[in-house]
Length: 69
Image (tube, rainbow, N blue to C red; front, side, top):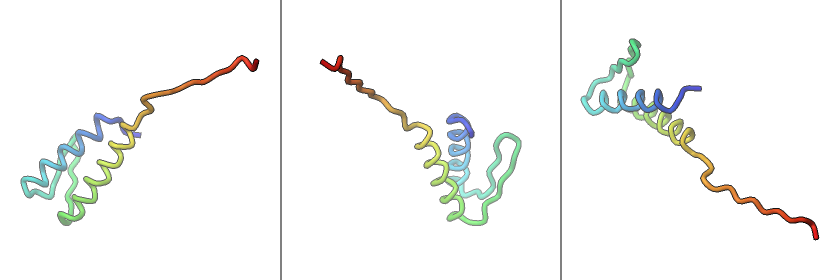
């Protein structure tokens, strides 16, 4: 699986290209051309889902025990 930093870099590159109105994105020496803005939006939504899934962590763990008395 790709790490969080890489997913964030891909999302940032895709968002920058979309805001400029460009359908070709280049990152890490690779070039991807999207057919439409809808396809770019779908790719952004997928990246955002993956980023959200990678950042969901358990923040509190409660342990309850007893000596059985």
